Amino acid sequence: MSALLIDQVPVPVPPRLRLVHDADAIPRRRTSRGRFVVRVISAVIAVLLAVALGAAAGLALRPTPAVGTGVVTVEAGDSLWSLAAGLAGPGRDVRDVVAEIVRLNGLATDVVVPGQRLVIPGR
Image 1 (cartoon, rainbow, N blue to C red):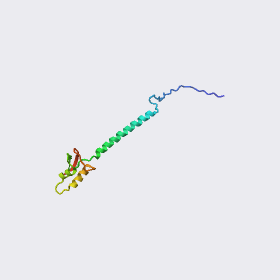
Image 2: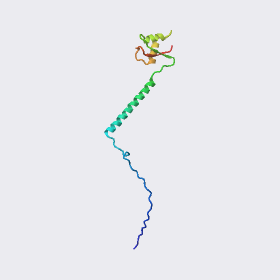
Image 3: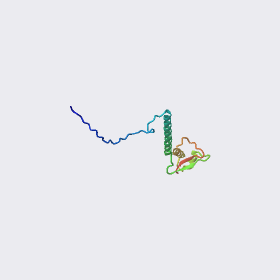
Image 4: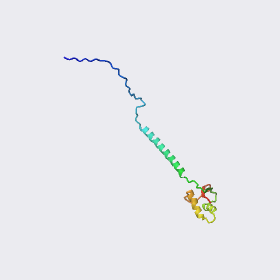
């Protein structure tokens, strides 16, 4: 017969670290109201961003007076033709000056109103 002898010697075991979840750390499911709020906030941010970018693009595309140009304020009774006639010197066609004023100001028509500021070509 054989015998088995087991000697039980206590071996110290180092303590183990365990991860304990806080109640706040547990992921929660979003309710339909929560999803709606997230969508609305995202849409508002997108609209504000689009408005800001559009305003910046509008400022960048605004025509600036070129070197050798001036600015005049239209008064009552003024027309593009009368303004151009005052600017056209000898040997310069008034029609060319009118076309230049229209081009410099990006005008769709030749109608001007009192108080309107126009960029005019240099003399």
